[in-house]
Amino acid sequence: MRFFFVTLTLVSALLLSLSGCVSTARSYGFPEQAFVFEEEQQESLNTPELTFYSKNQVITPAPNEVDDNQKIFEPLSCGETFCQMDWSGWLMRPFSSPDRERIDLTYPYASTSDGRLAIHHGVEFPNPYGTAVRAAAGGEVIFAGTDDGGLIGPYQNFYGNVVILKHSGQFNDEDLYTLYGHLSSIDVKQGESLETGDILGKVGASGVASGSHLHFEVRYENNNYASTTNPVLWFSPLSDQNSTMTGTIAGRILDRFGKSVSETSITLQKLNTNGTVVKTYYLKTYAQDGINPHPALAENFALPDVPPGDYRLSFVVGTLYEVLFTLEPGMLGFINLQVN
Image (cartoon, rainbow, N blue to C red; front, side, top):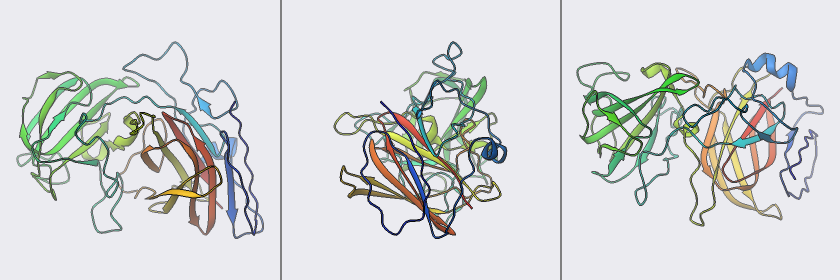
């Protein structure tokens, strides 16, 4: 049985045992804190609702309107600090085992590497030079070549050898586009139709690249650099070494005026049954310029392939905020907070 509660208090000491699916939100530093939820928060978030069948954390798509290629969700609105839903994804990873399927977390989507780099419009898959790159879904090759003769990214020869696939009507009757950049070689031609998993090229370091890796983008509705979204949220979670499904964490943190907070540091700690930290992840909310959230989530941070279990998420926006929750295998856990 899942259960849920939220508390918000100023405390000097914390003694908490986590079990089941529990979510607790706290802030520290002010005598009184108030989160804005449900109707008030919905006005500021301005996003459509998901369909719920209970008051627990599991969110389900509307019945009789979902098929394998069009998993139609209305953007998230669970009215709680934390909720989760089954997240089976729309795309497969562009690599298959034994090649590396995990995304590099040092330069994630919408990050700037602490201001040292341009805002990232995709994610990176480090793999050795010449590793086969596969189609993330069935689609049409609409570009295959070098980008030195036209503007596909922010400037010419940004991606080097690059392939773009169009996936017609892949989400909510809208088209998705996947881009595969920095390739060493291209194995397809414009106009070809590919199936999921077909090899389209090989990993390289062409264009503006540091070391061999695949630069991967997901573009929603339009095939341009301004239409990218976070690829993390289009994939299914991976299984770990014990064949247990991992999960995905995402969320939105808004300021008191309902605006997304940008490049705010977040600490995510995995806890064992007695509350001891066993693993720590460090991430940031999105840098905002030219960045788009997933059309069903309106998120401003995300982290893929997180082991299931008990977690504490914390960040500082004027004061310290904490959320404690339990993530289940194969789920997308979503944190939804507006701070004072």
